[in-house]
Image (spheres, rainbow, N blue to C red):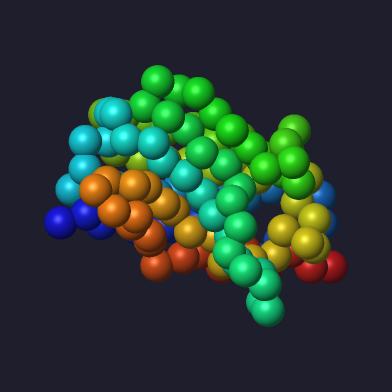
Length: 114
């Protein structure tokens, strides 16, 4: 059974940083491509970043240069370091992988407001 559990969300002011974590189980984490998506109120879920088993990364233009995705294989954990946060980054952030089918975590709320 695949399980993805996010943690690390919260409320911050513009310009501050947060790190999200995702604990994964039920997959071969070493080879699985892992990703982060987000959904703001009233908007569709959108891609944020992903990382392959080999460590190749892809970012949405809106977060490039500010967010860093990484993974720790022995710990089966995925991370998203979010720097220089903006109000438009406010959303629920979801951990994602495709393992025979798409799998999603429960989401972590990130609020950026002054």
